[in-house]
Image 1 (cartoon, one colour):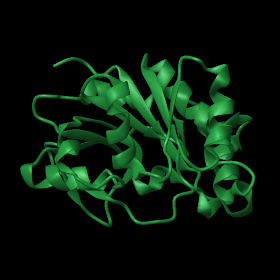
Image 2 (cartoon, one colour; image 1 turned 90 degrees about the vertical axis):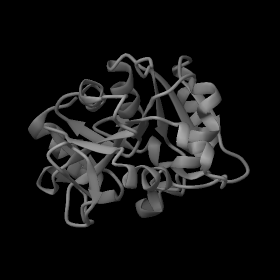
Image 3 (cartoon, rainbow, N blue to C red; image 1 turned 180 degrees about the vertical axis):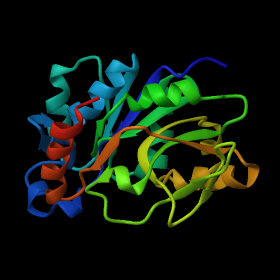
Length: 231
């Protein structure tokens, strides 16, 4: 079982929480500290030595045009319907080439070590179905919801609304996607397969993480980068 060599960067969403900012452009092209969110994510993947793939749906042509300067990045356009994270990953599997893979949301900014390197160092493919990168609420920026998960001493996860926050970065085996018949579905469906089998794991990110989901999140993320540095 080989080491993961590819990362799927999710960039297909509508960005409705951004309000007017996403009426003229997709959320992944909104800039934080002078760079598009999508470029922040792709730099994380590139710095980790990974081949990156991006999915797109809302204003997909703008995403594709933006990535013309990165010919090494393949773009998968979801038409006619958006496929959500699970469906998008499943549709891209023939192009990703191999299992396991990393996934990374494009609406986050990091201050600290490379999140994908953190996952790679802790990944144990023989015992884990997925390894999620989590962060405590007190080291989130721009995040206004509850936590998602709690981890035991062996890093196995349970769902916990008061726990740590899933950052949108993970490494996972993709075989279970074949058991899900829907075309459009969240990766939560795959995690729900893994939870009863104690195959869902998580580790804590040691740095700071910004959720850039609303207009306020842009300035908060920029302030975080000024205070704590960049990946």
